[in-house]
Length: 232
Ligand SMILES: Cc1cc2nc3c(=O)[nH]c(=O)nc-3n(C[C@H](O)[C@H](O)[C@H](O)COP(=O)(O)O)c2cc1C
Image 1: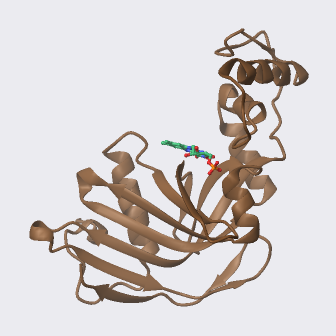
Image 2 (image 1 turned 180 degrees about the horizontal axis):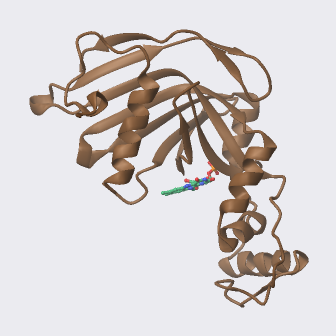
Image 3 (image 1 turned 120 degrees about the vertical axis):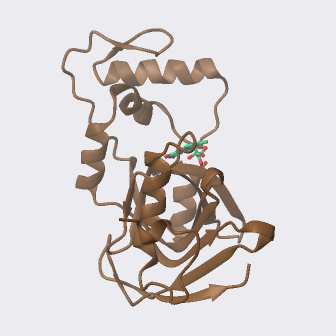
C-alpha cells in the first residue's frame, strides 16, 4: 500500500497532524541513506542580545506523538547557554535528493536524566569518552592541548588510552558514566512547515501551528494542530 505521507503533492485538505508526516520523511531519508547523516538538522538559537546562531546537530529521536524531537549535546555549550535565557528554537531538515524540507519552530527543554543515561549507555566508548573530554564551545590553545585533556580525563575515569586517543586500551569493564553536563534536549514543536520541491519553482508548502502549555520540566500539553497551505 502506498504511504500517503510520501506523496509528491500535499492533499487539498491538509491532514491534522504534520509530525507523523515529518517522521515518515525522516524515516524514508534514513532507510534510503539519501545522504550522510540523513538525521542532521540545522538548529537555530537566539542569544539574549537578539543575535541568532545556527549549527548542525543530529536528531536522535523524533517522537511524532506528542510531538518533539531530541538531540544530544554538551549542556555547557553555547547553544545551551543561549537556551537558558531563550528556549525558543528553530530547526530545519533538508534532503536534496528527495526534494523535501521540514521547518520546525518550538521550545527546547532538557531531556529527563534517565533518558539521557539510557542513550549515553548505548553509545560506543570512544563517543562516551569524547563527552568527558571536550568542554564544547570553550576556547582551546591547540589540538595537542585537547588530546592531553582527553588523556587526563580518561585516566581520571580509570581508562587507558593510546597517545593519539584513538583507542581505549586495557580498560577491562570500566563503565564510563554519563557526565552531568552532557545529555539530551527535547525540541517541542509549536509550528511545522512541510515543503515539497516542484517543477518551475511551483513548490508546495503546508504550515501547521499549535499551542504549547508547560506541564512540567520536560513536558508540554499541546493544543490541536491547525494547517494552512502557503504560496511558494
Ligand atoms: C553532521 C554534523 C553533526 C553534528 N552533530 C552534533 C550533535 O549531535 N550534537 C552536538 O552537540 N554537536 C554536533 N555537531 C557539532 C555542532 O555543529 C557544533 O559545532 C557544536 O554543537 C557546538 O555548537 P555551539 O558552540 O553553538 O554550542 C555536529 C556537526 C555536524 C557537521
